[in-house]
Length: 400
Length: 221
Image (cartoon, rainbow over all chains, first blue to last red; front, side, top):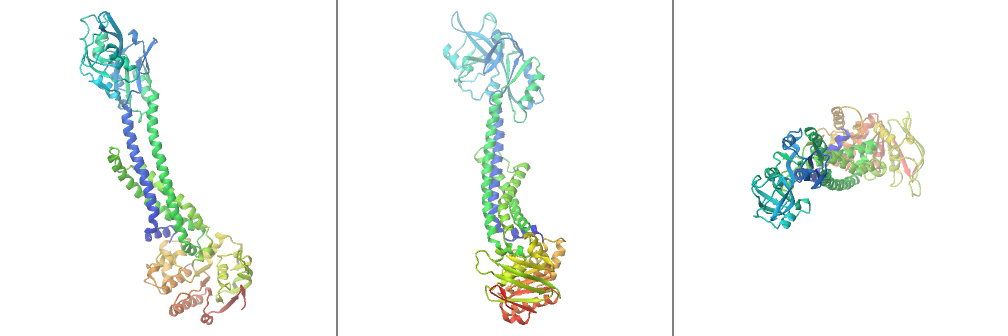
């Protein structure tokens, strides 16, 4: 017979008495495990979505010239057409060590040109050559009236430009700078495929055209003004990706849009903090319910404690028995909670959030669940066990 | 023969109480004696047993057991003292309900070193001594009142204490079971244990070697 043997015998032979502690802790741990599992799945999903939402790294040529702001990024000397780099930059970007962290690469050529609506009155305009597939993948917030350009001779107008030129889907534009591409030397006049719904940014004042078309129109075949990159930063710090890009592109300036990254991390962080706060409250409630249950059990067991005292158990040994029981119940409750939490996460994740969540929360989370159950149980048992240990033997024996 | 227990001017005054539960009691119990403590209800019998059992401390006076000043011990020291020197038999409801007969008997050995198997063997020997072989795995609810009391006696013996304290051990039993319990206590006393038994039953006066009669907290004979 040992003190823990006595504790185990009580739990084994009076399971109903132990049920309250087991159930309260199982519910608490199940809630924690399901919440954290779903939250983790949501976080991964959100990270994946956010990482494809807009650029967080911009690569531009090194230049000491004047700069033009595009989308909040300073683009060196585009209006002078003096600062571009080779389109080989794209393959260099794709070759860095952490290339798997790069989700979208959107190369651009930006240049000033003109659109002639009324003869001899060309309107100066900023033309941005893009790969529409990459651009649309990166700028998921774009809404287009009409269609997204498909062919090389289709363009997308910013809302302000469309209004200024009074052009819309299906119209044709007369574009080009005679000095750069004399009549007959440039591409065919492009057709307006769609108009960008107002974004409230510099994009409203731009014309987006196919990259190849723009390069031919501006006479800059194989040249790029900038490359926008959307990188997944959850598994690799953005600073590391920037460092690798800087090494790979010695002629370029690589800038991390820290505000965008920070905002994404903040969103994800808030999600995690909210889950932890809810989990903490639930564990606290579980511990309180367990404490009331253990306390009531100790009150009912004054007679037994009197017997323990009579046969010579010291206060600390009685506390070991009480805490041993609570610990055993906590471990059972914790294990049950981990299993139930996993099943709940799998169900909730699929039904409520449309996520595929594994019912096995993983060893670290299962370990955390068990440790939390044990901690909550021991905290719940601390006061009742202390009370039992300090019970006056004469008072306890009055019940005998 | 030497006194194994001696009380000198022991007084116990409960808080808020009028007259003391025990009033300047002097008592010497010889080693190997079978002492019957008698007296009317409220005479101080249970208080005397509590003080002898180091459950309660006297308000004043000294309790010596086997040369040890029990009154100088703190709560934990008194627990260890009970473990080593005393075996208790109470009137009723004295078994731990979720432990089997053999586990109840082995209870005092929990705090002692030794293998579990050895402890259970010792407990089984004690159960055999009170003629309960075959009932080792029974829970208290599966035992009769007399059997429960015999388990309690086996438990009081298992740590081989020099002194057995029994508080109305036959109080809840019929005559036959009561006689059996008294017979067992007599046997235990014959084996050399000092037995102090509180009882109301004057019929047991003939069995004990010494009688202490209490009235209003004082020993009158």
